[in-house]
Image (tube, rainbow, N blue to C red; front, side, top):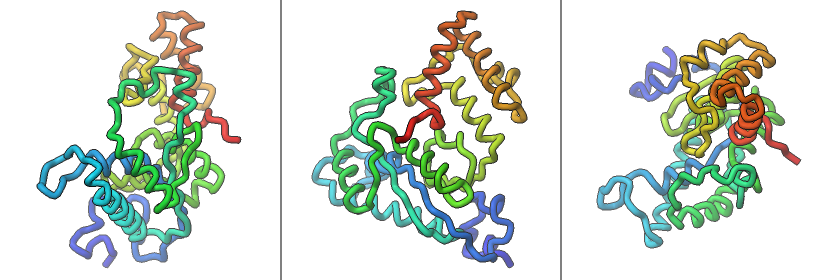
Length: 267
């Protein structure tokens, strides 16, 4: 009997059976790349306090409890991964002081409310207690991409909740949904270009307005070459900017810099 059918169906709905055919086989070694920014926000803005209140407004009096909650959540996630893989290393990435994206597009993430000041204390705690790596003038997902590329997609697990990272090929664990996902090269390409057209409302980036999913699916198919993807993307931006080629190209390239991970320079 496979492990999937025992232990009270713990493993039934997490998607791992689509990835590992024999759950009794020896575990593979993997390095975890953890996009930790969302984890910190999840810790601060979700859950219940001691009174049972949902999504409470935490204060400085709650900081020790929040630190403990963050550590507990992190250990639980790592334990979930270790059910199926041997963790041979783990890199935890957090934001830096200021992203270059804000410099090239001042409206980037300007639609977000001011964060709870406690988030800065949690960032410091993550660095001190969990050896989290700040991303300088980049963002956590940029470092995930860099390490994923250099360590090799076959050697890593991307631990995440932000679908921005789904433009990469490889093995993913969505800790928010407790779901495993394996993304092929073709699917990652599709995800990347759909993101450019759809934009990211949460980041305040929507530079291809008026072009919806139906138009995208008329232009793109999953077996396209890179050159065909580029041609299709230009068609979408030309539609958005009423065939003004200069504006279309300008905003297409800006969108890639703001939303794409492959266009970030790493020194």
